[in-house]
Length: 237
Image 1 (cartoon, rainbow, N blue to C red):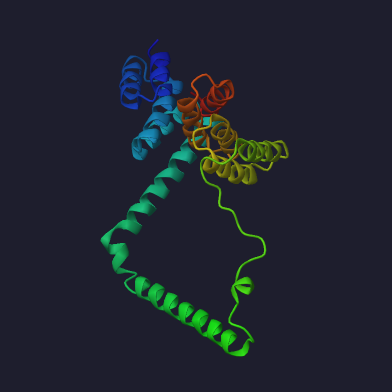
Image 2 (image 1 turned 45 degrees about the vertical axis):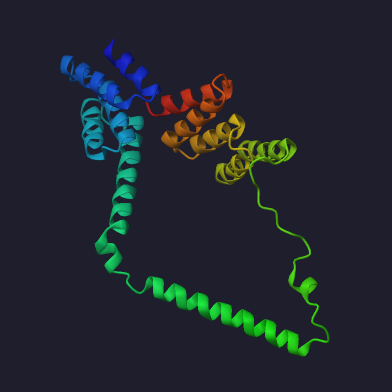
């Protein structure tokens, strides 16, 4: 069946080929709302937002008020809006509208530096000793997570993220799993946790990307495979 073949190609990340197969299926039966939806999701993934909107519209014409189709349409429109905003901000016109921004930043930085220098100078003048290193250093040094940290720290971070998911706090869990990824970028567990947090937030396409990264690092990781399937089903494909 062409729809099944198209979905298989989509799951493999072969979006152009998937779109071609799904379009062939619609030539044979243009009333298949599942195929219209699958093609819409494929076009969204490819960044072809206008074509995706048409596909979701067709699916809703055939099967009105279907929640998953309405949700996919909303996701597409949100991505389209975000894409257009990023284009406008990077265009020459957008830059002309804010010509003074770099100058303001430079001046602000200059005054901040001068204020700090002035404060240190006054401190030195009024103090009994020039040995002020201990006064300027924090009592508890901050530690930035870096790749290659001991596994115990990475594992405890993942456990914290999992507990937050159980408490239905996906926003906080997402932050924690991203921290775990910084600690160990090649570990499948953190990417999988991020995927489940994104599912809870309704960001299914981003969740699929996270699960794909987990499977790139560990192709047999069962939780990532299961999570990816959940995200695909949530998109109706």
